[in-house]
Structures are given as structure tokens and as C-alpha cells.
Length: 296
Image (cartoon, rainbow, N blue to C red):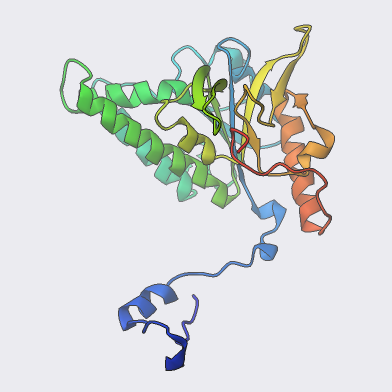
């Protein structure tokens, strides 16, 4: 914990720090980011694209030797992973109305590095979530059944939107424990008002339009998945353009992939590792990639 030293110079126009404030301040930790090693760091990745383009199949491109698990709340959406050596935890809307509570308990278990059957979250490196677009509907139905209602009403719509924010932030925060969190979503178009008053239509993840920007801001990488021009290969776009929302917090990645990169999670994770290794060694990035997912 940090030790608070009060400035006793009464001539500097400062404000007296009260004892209670000192106690609260001393409970804070000061972290030297140079001491954070790449091997200790996780990452949060959001990949979105058209339905049927193969987003769920991406989990098959993860390194076989890396321990992983996929949380699935897309009924029937696990079919692309049939036969793969990937454990799946299905989220279901149970009649008992406890679906939301089970998911929260699962988040707490992962954060505490506990075990679920044969799954040991202390050793699991990659946590997949398939997918965000269905998640809000999952929460709406869970709230409806928990409250013993027959229909989703205005209260459930509002509460589910808040729960999405809360739970996705908790899921993202698993990176603190060295996890790679990979979330999938469908895509939608959304209008943005530019500084010049011109309306621009962009592709964004298919999440609630009132908070999609907030959700994108939680992730280290937001990538849109689509096809190349001749429809022979799928690709990731990690740089925002006038019509695509995307972002990447590792500017070093743009050296090797200035426009698109292969739609392969092994390639993406290797690029993140190399970028962190380069940054850790003190080398200077040569490309600019800061800003939000809309290029601001």
C-alpha cells in the first residue's frame, strides 16, 4: 500500500487532507507498469461479423496446447465446434429463473481461479464467450422468469442493459488473472454524427445501440471479420475506417498488418505476444493506432 505524506507548507494554497481521506488513500496501490511482464498480462478481444461467416469456428484456430473453455449462450450455435477438443459451458434459460445467477456464480468462480468439474480455471488460459448479441436477450428472459412474469416488460429491458455492462466488464476483467478473453458478436449498422454535422453509417457489433460504444471501449482489440474482395479468405480489420468500427491498443501490430490480418486466432495472439515483447524491450512503435473504435 502507498504511504501518504501530507504537505505541511501552508503557503502553497493547498487543502488539508483529512485523516479519513489519508486512510482511504493509503489503501490504494501504485503500480509501475514497467514491472508488468507480457507473460503475466491477459487481453480482451471482441470480434464481430455477419451471421454465418464463421466466428464460432474461430475457436478451432486456437493453439491446441493452450488450455481453453468456451461459454456458449447461443442455442445451437455450438455446432461448428462439434468434435473439437474444446470444453463448452452452455448457458440456458432455465424454468427456475436462475440462469442469470448461475452466470454470475460462474464469473465469480473464474475470478477466484476455482474449479468446475474437470475444469481448473487456474490453468485455463483462454476464455471464449459466444456470443454478446444473444446475451442481452438471455438476461431479459432470465429476469422475466426470476420475476415470474409471462412477458418481457420495460423494466426487464432497462435492467438487462445494465446487467450486460456489469457482466461484460467482469468478464473482461479476467485478463487481470492472465486470461485471454475472446468475445463474439453479430454486426449491425449504426449512424454517427460527425463533427462537421455529416451523418456517417458504420458497421459496429450488434449490441444495444445505446451502449455499444461503452462495450467496445472495454476491449483491447475490436476486430470486424469479413471476406476479402474475391470472397476466398476471411480476414480481421483492426483499424477503424469511415465505415467500420475497430480498434487495437497495440500500435506495434500495425507494422505487420496495416490493413487486414488473417482471420486466425493463433495469428492474432502471436501478434499480441510479439507486440508486448517489443514494447517490453523498449523498442519504439512506428505506427500510430491510438484512439477509440470509431477512429477518434
